Structures are given as structure tokens and as C-alpha cells.
Image (cartoon, rainbow, N blue to C red):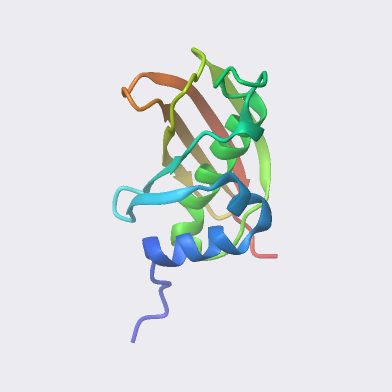
Length: 142
């Protein structure tokens, strides 16, 4: 029997997401998880609380940033099976997200002993790239 951790399944990831009050409020849903590619994809539907202005259907940058950080974190959590604190985080907003659900894909670029780096792409339902994020997470054992 191997001591190596088995990656989280999409169902295990979804259960963890649903146990967090804030993430459950975001409504993130895991649609793909590939441990070999170190890649996770989640969707999120628009809700009125996420609007930049009431009735506009335009996503505010705050929820977008929270989604990018969370999906990025889970790209590493999938292999490490534990939450990881964010060390550094940035987002480039490329175009407005209006009246669309979001499809967010995170790819691990580095999974080291002390830090992990993840790139995150956010698309609308028409597959237009809306935002890109990069986050660094501490991978040290607590």
C-alpha cells in the first residue's frame, strides 16, 4: 500500500466547497478535475448579489477575484488534500462579464515543497476570455 495521497475526486472537492459558507454562497460547481494535468474547472452562475450595479447583470470584480482565488486554490488542494493559504494574488480584468455564468479553469504551474503557483482563466458562456489570475499559495504543512 502506498503512502502517497490520492487526489481528491470531483465529488470530494464539491463536498468541501459546499461545507464552506462563503464558497457555498458563491455557488461554485466542479465540472472537471484532472490530477494528471493538475487542472480544475468550475462554473458559477450570476446572482443579484454579484452585480456591479443593480439590474445590470454585470459581474462586480470582487466576486470574480474570490472565484479565481478559490478555483486556483483547489487546483493544488486536489493533490494535497488540505486548504492552503494564499501568499500572493493578482487579477487582470480583460472585458466585462455581463449576463453570463462563468467557467473558470485553474492550472498548476508549480507545486513545490513550500509554494505552489496557479494560473486561472475565466471565460463567459460564449468562451470569451474575461479575466486571468495568478496566485501563489503556501504548500507548507501547518
